[in-house]
Image 1 (cartoon, rainbow, N blue to C red):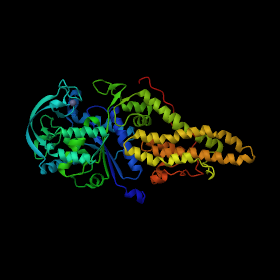
Image 2 (tube, rainbow, N blue to C red):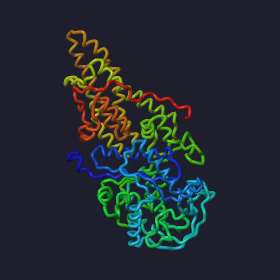
Image 3 (cartoon, helix red, strand yellow):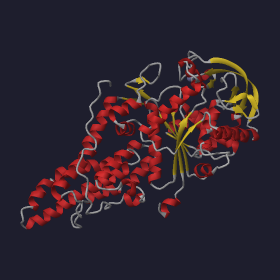
Image 4 (cartoon, rainbow, N blue to C red):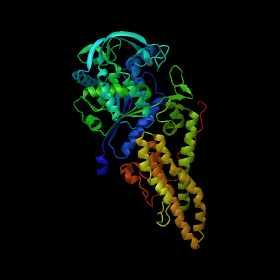
Length: 537
Ligand SMILES: [Zn+2]
């Protein structure tokens, strides 16, 4: 890392931690890929970055699902956690930490530390409570939050009336402070509509919420309340803590906590819309009570339907992302989720669109460009990158490529991977046009003629070949946060040692002219072979 890079502030990016009561579906893949791209981009431009993910092991939902499956809870959870982790690995998610909230002594100790900090601030008290509880959401609902027929809005199932003695978090006290913080942009809530939704929720008046339940109702599968083992910590309090307990908050070594929470320039949570208020109201209020810094950004994605149907185990149409990866490859799934699915609105997953997107953009677009350019390099220049003659540049293409860092910064800065990839794809389209316009095969014929025009043609062919390959190199650098494996393969084909190159500062890598004349490229091999839609889809 250079001096410049080292001086950039650190960034902390998280996914939510899913319940592991079933196997992951394609919506989980979306969140993994978004968070991974946000983290990889920050890392690439020089921020020390940590990507955190994990699993919510302590959910009552896990207990109920295990009971239905007739399996011991621990073994059931273990098996499902492996599926989530396996998906993250298959998608090339570069996580630095994978926290499991169950069977984790340091998480337990950290949760207890945050509980005590809130308690010391007078934010926790005990009282009897009667409420409408949805087991699916593990949340209490007020009657006006239910559907017209009195059902949970998420699950369309009737909530249970539950009465018990619980500890409560004094949320009602934090409304004004939360409102001020959010209006001041801390956390920044993306998109704007979710920010407005949060403010409207605060303005309706905040009610204290239960943060414990009887140990008996939880089947003992949770973290005991400090000083009161008859009660366990309510799963939301426990789960939300993961973002800082994973960093060692309240533990003996809090180096990571200081670097990636208190001292971080960015603390970014990536979540789905269904858990908005937990992350923009409850969690910030817990942090305010404990006197800890708030997240800087909460990015909220929408829900995916699959071929027009809501994803749900009951509906049996939850597309298995591992099967998609086996069939079409991790690049294809990453590309589709980032390039086609709207980053924050609801979207519809379609295998046919995934295949079409991959074939159009990667197969026919970038893959074809590299293959044409590299084949001509091998045919006309024995596979060795020529020096571009100074008098025959392709200025428009160079300008397009050199404009990428600013454009990508603006679009990733607004959490819009699609817009970033629009920008990255402009040089690809322009290069494919250039091949047709410049007709390198005619230039090659002319350079062999041995007349006065031959030298000019030779210079022009050098310029065109260099411009094409250099554009592919710069596109590959900018693809790294989105398609890390494919970006490495592109660079390898250009004769670049990806690992060595990735240690150079981004601003140098992104500068036009970085492809060294004399570099020998690999023999042309199609990087994105055409996909056919599987009959199973
Ligand atoms: Zn529910």
